[in-house]
Image 1 (cartoon, rainbow, N blue to C red):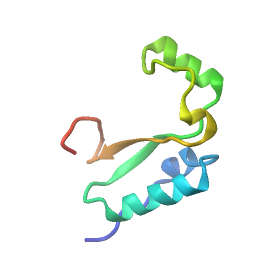
Image 2: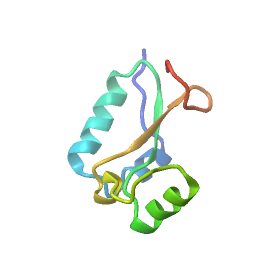
Image 3: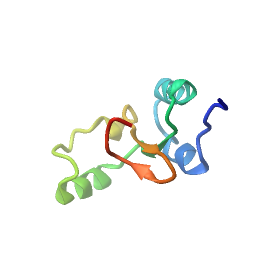
Image 4: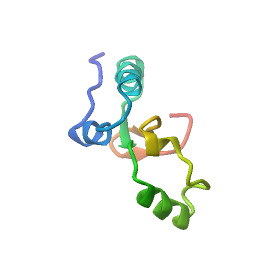
Length: 85
């Protein structure tokens, strides 16, 4: 099986993320039997506030703000959030 590679969108989402976490994301993609995308990485406090208002998060103290968290989603012809993907 050919290893998966991050799209331009995923690579853009990894900009500003802590280098160790970026390395983990790349290694996870190499090992994963399911392709996935990085949907969001580093966030501003303003973005975090937007997400809180929308009900997508419960905190303003997210590790995304410091570049120590990423969101990923399975890619199976489309973004899928359901499990067991």
